[in-house]
Amino acid sequence: MQTIADITRLGREHLALHGAAALSLRAVARDLGVVSSAVYRYVQNRDELLTLLLIDGYNELGDEVGAAVDAMPEDDFAGQFIALAKAVRSWAIREPASYSLLFGSPVPGYQAPGERTTVPGTRVIVRLVGIFDAAYRAGALNAEVLPAVVIPEKLAADLAAIRAELNLAAPDTSLTRGVLVWTSVFGAVSFEVFGQYGPDTFTARDELFEHQLRVLQGVVGLQG
Amino acid sequence: MQTIADITRLGREHLALHGAAALSLRAVARDLGVVSSAVYRYVQNRDELLTLLLIDGYNELGDEVGAAVDAMPEDDFAGQFIALAKAVRSWAIREPASYSLLFGSPVPGYQAPGERTTVPGTRVIVRLVGIFDAAYRAGALNAEVLPAVVIPEKLAADLAAIRAELNLAAPDTSLTRGVLVWTSVFGAVSFEVFGQYGPDTFTARDELFEHQLRVLQGVVGLQG
DNA sequence: CAACAATTGAGAGCACTGCTCTTGACTTTG
DNA sequence: CAAAGTCAAGAGCAGTGCTCTCAATTGTTG
Image (cartoon, rainbow over all chains, first blue to last red; front, side):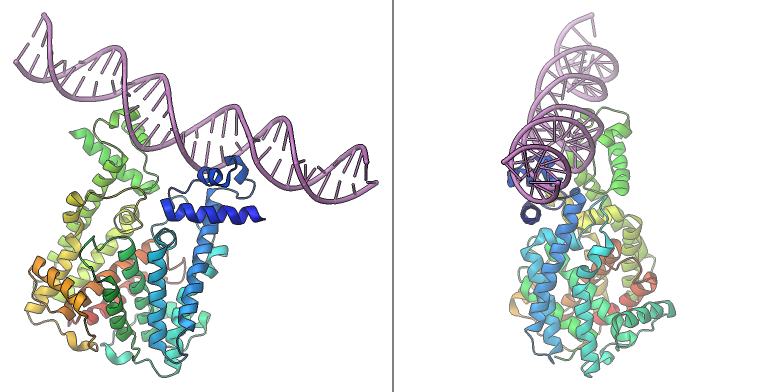
């Protein structure tokens, strides 16, 4: 089964060089030094290869995020949050095609098989809420920094399900703000990777991102 | 020049039905009842059609956002912000393919011609900072709600350029928070449109978005 | 060791794509 | 009325995903 590893490796190269939509099984076969029909022995179809690359990407991101968070002191929740976000951004900038595949527009006609992608695909958010929840349990989360906003009943029901699913202790206010921070981090990274800022509006992108993280840290009530 | 309008119209339909990557000039030609080579009379190539659809999308979004904001009282800055964000989300959910084209992963091999897309492409953010700046000038912006975060010099230089370019009065703190709110809004919308939340994590999506807007409103210091 | 079975790659082929070029018909203009 | 311009058709090239058959190689078993 060395071949299937070669195929995903070459697939990753093509993904990085030409993007997901231009991912061609024939080109991979060429690089593999084999005729196109031969790769169908190992990979059912193009979508299957996409799924392999998807899982691959999720796991690489998850590993890097995990390592970055683990490198911080166990009680430095703000530091862990910053480290997580920076790890996401670093990986995204280094692997823009993979990031696009995971977090960009869905590939038309392709539906990720949930039973294979959900677990690796939720590693980052699970880790993030883990940080917030640990901070809450340690009394390091102060939700009073911003004016309180009422949470409608329907939303509270969703939050209750999440709390049960992930064994969380944090209250609704903290959970919704955690979700907001989550989307904001990926929104900022996506803007950068997808070129929404334009070529020269922001030259100090490291500083901009770091600054946004500090503000978000305040939003969720992590004292730094 | 009716033909070119027909082509973009059919292009939009195909975009909505099959997505940007699957946009085929031949299929458009078929629907137009004409042979494929004929459309090359009117549209230089596939990228040109993509550009037309891009500008079309930006303008439609810009129009809807503008109308939504204009419908609010001139001194209700928080209401204007909420209206803008909701208009973005409504349009994105209604036109997911167009939204993907504008704010999703870049189409591989396609580079938008800045001289044609920059102006329509910045309508929303220009409008958004306009709201924040007007609020600041009216004394309705309170940046003290969150702990102050230092702004490094390089970032301040970027902000100074933006301030000059758009004739703004708001200070750095408000500007960076405006940028954060901007990315956060689009991050939240992208998560929803791109299916990052998963199929059933959040059932109360209207409420979730509204709640996030209220929190963001606090972040930028708009009193509601 | 020989016979059988399973695995693997090659090649042809179908239907599709973007795009170019030439040819012929039609319409407008001088 | 003839020249000039406009337009669509059709053939063709190179690429794509994918399926099928066939031959060669390899592994297994009696």
